[in-house]
Structures are given as structure tokens and as C-alpha cells.
Image 1 (tube, helix red, strand yellow):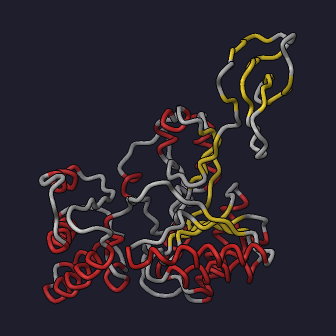
Image 2 (cartoon, rainbow, N blue to C red):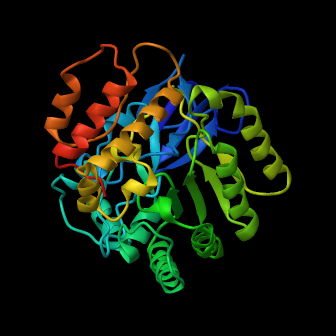
Image 3 (cartoon, rainbow, N blue to C red):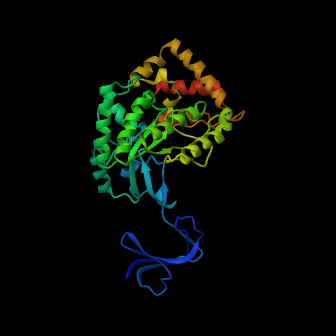
Length: 377
């Protein structure tokens, strides 16, 4: 006797084959049979005529790392048919938590059902809360780098690279599925190509994968792709390019060249792919607006720079140019970011849905950075 029997549905099995009418039997946590099972017995029978029956979807780019500890039932994913989440993307992961590494701001202020530092401890806590979805953890490069160097704005030295290799290997041995980078974020943005080659080589040797929020998704998109493909060529690692996009009107025409580079790499035998989200907006940490020269060395150093009149003028000029350059339309725009501070939310909501100029957007951003206690490290 089976535990569940799903009868009469149109089965899409994930192979790319057309839908076919079939029954599906489940025993325990496994699909036990697919076919004509009308005479079979089960503890629970689910009529599915007129419905599609398919495997659970995999969310290949999730940031639910800590939220699964808080709401393990994961209704926002389960109700969409997602049964597996790949977390730890864009260089940010829940573990390992060593040295100066700080969790992203929207994870940091929550109260969790337990404490953890290592990947093994995080996995134990995750198993304790029993999330409804399967969880695949990538190890964030920012966690590794900040754990060894902190948030300094410089390339790593040879001894620091070796320490990062050791920390990454331990995290992968404890259950990490691969390495992720977020090369627009601090401190990952300061990593030299040699550092990335050393770390991806560790992951490749252990049979793991590499995902990347690349250094650029706009003006330097093609150069960023070359860097990413170069890592696959140098180390043989499997590569996933995260949320491939051509940001900014002047870069829209690069999409064909970007896809051609990926296709050429695959044709040459490299295991490389890309994912993409189906909307024309993005949301990330507020401090990503800061250029590299202003974003390093930790929160206190960043805020100190912002309070210097000459630095503020330089930042204003750069941010005005950037907003004007990347505007996709004239008139009203929506600028989104993440911050856990209620004051920040209220500041943005004070003037909802009205036209903002580039100058007013820059003023709001810099005022928030200067006055509110938010995470800019």
C-alpha cells in the first residue's frame, strides 16, 4: 500500500517531454511508481484530473538562509510549488561566521531559535527546525573574506589567501555545495582575480560549483563575463552566472554579445550556465550605491567619509552621473533597496510615487547613509 496516490493528472516529469496522463504513487518521501495505477491502494488518494502534476520547482537563487530558521514552513515558496532552495548566493551566507564577518542587515536584527558559527552548526539548527523545503547551501565569499581580512579595501596577501582557502575547504567539507561571490559588494569587490582563482580551485577540487553576482551587470558586463568564464577555464569548475542582465539603457544592446560568450564557452566544453529573473527591477543593500573608494574599511570609516564635505561633493557628482546614465525612462522611477530600520522606510515613504529627479534621489540616499544606523559594512 502506498502513502499517497495522485490520480488522473497530466504529468510533466521535468525531462522536457510533453505532458502525459498518468498516476503517481508516493511511499514515504519517494516517488514509488508512475503509470496506470487505478487499481492500486493508498492511505490517501488525491484526484488530479485537469491538473498538472510535476516535480517540485528549484529556486536556484534564494536568500532565505536565515528566514528558514524563523519560518520553516516556508509558505511563500511552498504555495508556488518550490520544494528546493539554493541559498548563500551573491557572496552572503549564514556560515561560516568567523572573524569580523557580519550577517547582512536584514538577517542581523532577528532572534533565532539557536546560535551558530560553523556550517555544521547552521546545518544542525536547520535540521532542528525541519524546514518544509530542501536546502542547498552555498558558501559566501564575503563570509570567507571578512572572516580573514575584515572589510579592508585592498587585495588579499598570499598568507591571507591561504587562510581563506582553508576556511572555505572546511565549510565545504561540512556540507557547503559550492562557492558564491558578490563582486559588487564589500568586501568581495576588492578581491583580485588571483584570489578568486585560488578559491574556485579549492571548490573545483572538491567537486563543488561556483555561482557569481559578477563585478558588473552594466557598463563592464562583457569584461565581467570574461573574468567568470576565465575561472571555469582555469579551474574546471562548474559555473552559474546569477541573474544575468544588461543594466542601464545604454547597455541593453549587449545582451546578444553576452549570450554569445556563454554559448561559446559551453560549446568549448565548459560547464557554465546563467539564470535570470522575469522582471525589470532590482533590490539590494543601500550601500551598493557607493563607489569602491568610498565603501571599504567598515561602517565607521564609511560614515566618517560621508561627513567630509569634499567627499560628499565628490560622491554627489558620481551618484548624479550614475543615476542619469542608468535611467531607463524619463520621468518617474522607482528606486528600491533593503534596510531593516523603520526610520529608513518612513523616509522613503514620505514622498511615495511622485517624480524624483536624479539629484533628489542622491540627496535621499546620502541623507539616509549619513543619519541612520544602518549596515554599510
